[in-house]
Structure formats: structure tokens, C-alpha cells
Length: 328
Image (cartoon, rainbow, N blue to C red; front, side, top):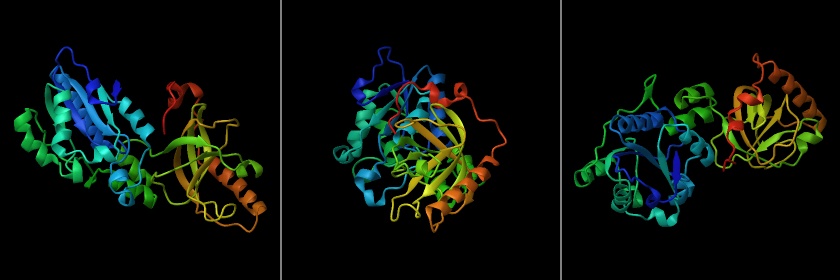
């Protein structure tokens, strides 16, 4: 798969027909996968190339940051998941203030001129594009007569009478229904990012942690969780804390940290995925660090009991197979 930053980079010397999917694809959930898989299948059946157009951030972060939704996955994880599809290439748009002012007709012309001969554009029913979000699927159908592409009518993907959407997944995560979020995603829910240097408070208490800056990620309810923790060194049992750590840091921003039960070492600047399994307790304030230390010891014992499986070895670790540094 090839990633391009500008449509001019697309090369199609053989003139194969092209089939495109366009969207933000936050979560790359079952609905997104349906759109992408349909695009790939149409391209394969007609000897064509399958491509996707996406953005390096959620457009609302630029257009209306005060109303921008939190994210299911950071940018790097989205790219990782897109690479696992059968797409031939995708164009990642740098969605900045200048691009946000691009007229809907100019955006469509960019796609149609550079990815020709374009035979199909596939989007979700609620997809919007162009200045002031005036472009939609009806506009794409109207202009298809000029450009000669098809717009398939795909019904929304439903599970248990629930339309699969990023909004629905965020709602399940915030409410702590991680099993339902996983069903809509089509994979176990995980908090993804890069390990950052913390204040070493966990190390001082005898429980060193891998710290993740959640930024604008959607997070489950605050508390302590038994969690699988995947790093480039392998997958390990862990106990994760999600919240503001009121005992040691008042008025702090939300924080995600995990104590790995089977690993000791330096993982700074490495990718990490924390998959909460069960919430052990809510976040609490303790009268002293000694009391906190005793509670953490109890948490690790309770967390360890949640893992009937043997931890995955390094050779079976998916993050280990990716030589490039992911930009989370």
C-alpha cells in the first residue's frame, strides 16, 4: 500500500479504473470497513485500483475546535489499521485552515482529475465535505453525471438494531460498556498512544508505570482496570489507572498509566496499547501515599486474578512487526 500527501503523487500508467472511499474513518469500525471492503471488492472485480481519501485530524478540530468530538484512535493507529486493509493506496490530507476553506466543487474536482479514470466514490450517508460542510452524498450524486462515476447506495451497518457509528462507539466507551464498543469496532477496544515520561511517582511507590498522554482520546470512566498492555516488547498483564490521580496530583489533566505485571524496563517513546478488561474500582483519594501504596498492592493482586491466559510472547506481538516508528 502506498500513502500519498498530494493527489499529484498518484501514478496510474496502465490507466486502470479507480474506485475510491472517502471519510475520516475514526475507529475504522465495522461501518467503515464495510465501505472500504466494498470499494476494494469493486476494484478487484473490474481490474481496478482501490484508494481511500482521509484526513490527518478530525476536520472539526480546525473548523470548530470547541465542538470537536474526542477521538477513538490517534492518527497513527488509524494509519496502522488502514494499512491492514486491501487498499492500493490512500491520500492523507493535511486538514488545515486553508484546506477547510476549499469549495466542495474544487475538492471533488481534485479527486476526479487526479484519480481518473474514476468509476466509483463510496462514502457514508452522513459524510460532509467542502467549505461550511456543504458537500454531501446528494451533491456527489448530482455531480456524478458530469464526472462519470457511480455512487453506490449502501445501507448503514447495524448490530442489534444499532447503527454502527463513531458517535455510538464513543458513547459506549464513555459509559464504560467496553464490550459493546468492541462489538461495534469489530475488534477489542484499546487506548492507543506513545509512552511518555511521567513524574516517576509510581516508581517511588514501588510500582513503575508506563504513562500515556491521552490528549483528545475518548476514555472510559475513571478508575483502576485489569488490562492487557501491548508494547514492542510483547503483551503483558497489567493494572491500569485512568483518571486524575487525586492523591498525588490535584487538578491534573486526565492521565492513563499502566503497571506491567511481567515486565521491567525502559519503554519511553514506544507505542503502547492498553486494553481494559474489567474495572476493579473507581478512582479514590487516599489519606497518605502509604495508604495509596497498600491499595495499589491490592489492585495488582486483583488484576492478576483476571488473566487466565498466559501472556503472549514477543514473537506474537503485533507492534513488534512494524519497524517504522508510529506517529501517535
